[in-house]
Amino acid sequence: MDTPVPRLALLGQPNCGKTALFNRLTGARQKVANYAGVTVERKTGWLTTPAGRRAQVIDLPGTYSLAPLSQDEAVTRDLLTGRLAGEAPPDLLVCVVDATHLQLHLRLVLEARALGLPMLLVLNMADVAAAQGVRIDTARLAERLGLPVVTAVGVQRHGAQALLAQIDDVLAHAVAPHPEGVADQIPDPAELHRQVRALLADAVHTPVQRWALSDRVDRWVLHPVWGYVGLAALLFLMFQAVFAWAAWPMEALDTGMAALGEWVGTRLADGPLRSLLVDGVIAGVGGVLVFLPQILILFLFIFVLEDSGYLPRAAFLMDRLMGTVGLSGRSFIPLLSSFACAVPGVMATRTIGHWRDRWLTILVAPLMTCSARLPVYALLIGAFVPRRSVAGVFNLQGVVLFGLYALGILSAMGVAFAVSRRTGGGARTPLLMELPAYRLPHLRNIARGLWERTTIFLRRVGGVILALMVLLWFLSSYPAPPAGFTGAPIEVSWAGRLGHLLAPLFAPLGFDWRIVVALIPAMAAREVVVAALGTVYALSASGDQVADALGGLIGSQWSLATALSLLVWFVYAPQCVATLAAIRREAGGWRHAAVVAVYLFALAYGASWLTYRLALAWGAA
Image 1: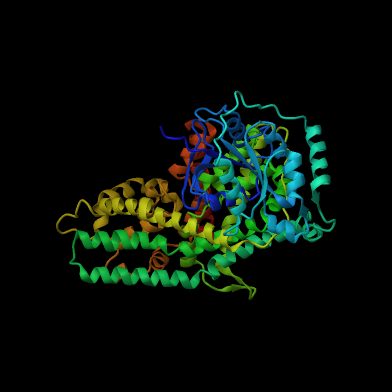
Image 2: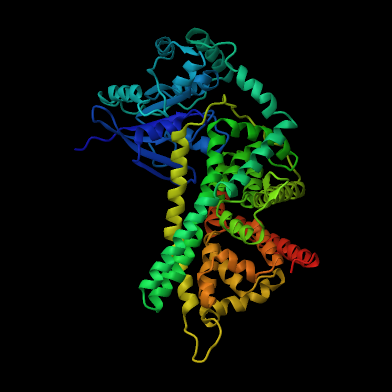
């Protein structure tokens, strides 16, 4: 009979380094899914101890307390107490705390100890604590708590050796059977605070001036005026860098894709296969791939700000401003996540306990400019906005990009204000958030994050976008034009006929039938628009135009009014299917997803129409 594999659960507060420790323990042997019956993400992996013993590791959602205020925290509590469907309590509970913030983390440790599960305590970030002069008597702390205590540095290569040795020691003995009915009564809060103070006084020495540097920086970062100025300056720098730093790698990728298309074209005879590879795959997929450097630069800034400890302060700073439009400061992190992709942004709203605040955040999250829009913005800005400096310092293209992001943010605040006032407002949920000490970003964490974003982008390019481009090429190439037809073959294809059919609906926005054809596959992925335009114009152009860069081609054929209208359309564009599906899961039905899709379409259409008319009135024809 096979021996059951022991299950270890990592428990800890946000920002304690629990996920870094999980990555250190499990390496690449990880799996991400959802808990049965709920949309909370679960991450599991496998570890092998130095003695060769294997165990399954569960990275529990971060929680401040086992008295839940959100769906994430409720799932953590239910798994530990055996109340989650199909999930037994773990065989060993590994409680991870930030060694530099024991006064904030020990309360959760005491709550977890009261469950009665086999447990050990990990003092993570032990190196940072030592550098700050924090001295922890681990033997005394273990004696007072009645459980093993080890130190760890989750971001270092060998930073989990003591933890692995302790797990080995636990697994060397038969794992005790789960107690009948795990205790789930949370101790009295006043008693917990008294115990935490006693533990700190008995086993921890903290220097008085440890927070002096962070406090001095926070006087400016959290200032009611200069804090907002600094945040705006950081965002402005980010968008300047997206264009300035990415110029040469984008040119290299563009040149490489053009050379590849020419090389393939000269080695294949004229026919369907040549058209598929050159006009469909290379012109389509290559048109999206060239924007990878800009996306990585955007995420580089986000990862650095997150790893340095600035993002929680930005959330705290924004709480006051967001409260004026009916949003909670807890909405900041989901909305920030939506700059990467609206799907994780919508999923992150589960940390908001109040339903009204959560629904309002879901409603406006799609207005944050996700990274899938960046290739569209970059294409149109590159084609219609000259590359020149403003005031001798700023890149004009970066200024326009910053303006598009700002328009999305201001629109989200306007929608939140209107909906909040119409629904009667309501009591705001107070924001309680830990502000960690500032620290230098860890290069390994940033490199891992950038690599993950690269692989996600490449999988998307090689999967969804490639499949859509092949389908669009087929619809754009067949049926073949009749004998004697002198126009572009795509005009009589199925895609061309559909574009001409829908063109009257979008004509008031300045969109012709080719733009309409490119907008259709954008329902699956926003960035497909660039690839679709590359395919449509490659198949509809003639002579030397096929080899021209897409930006130059549309720059010579579109009016500035049309380009501005399309830019504004993508600020509000109806969401991709994946985002609508995420809204359905999080909000509990397709009705909420339909509301989001309809209001975004109406907003996009109205804003694009107004932009086009104003641009024409100002002579941007």
